[in-house]
Length: 129
Image (cartoon, rainbow, N blue to C red; front, top):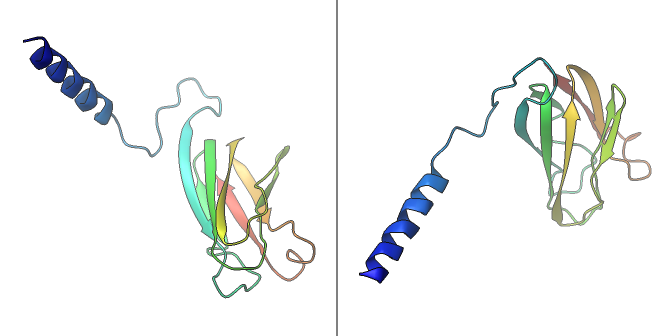
């Protein structure tokens, strides 16, 4: 009997944990920039070319996470600058990294901070609305 009750409670907890709203957006009560909760994906080409895919990103104001994937053997990172924000990932080779920042509406630049990569064109624009 006790095992049946514990099993039932475990299933109930798992069901409740699996329920909930979607991961996009979220409600932002009261005007600040605490809404959002958006995750953006950014990659570097497996060929090692000095560019990002895509070169333009859009997000809602609030907490924004950039998940960066670099499958190449060339080291890359992502840095986001603008509106008083300057955040960057660790430099990765053949791996993934991420950064999370609270972003207000406006335009931001993202680029690879590894020496010479930005100058070679590894940059893009993030528009936050």
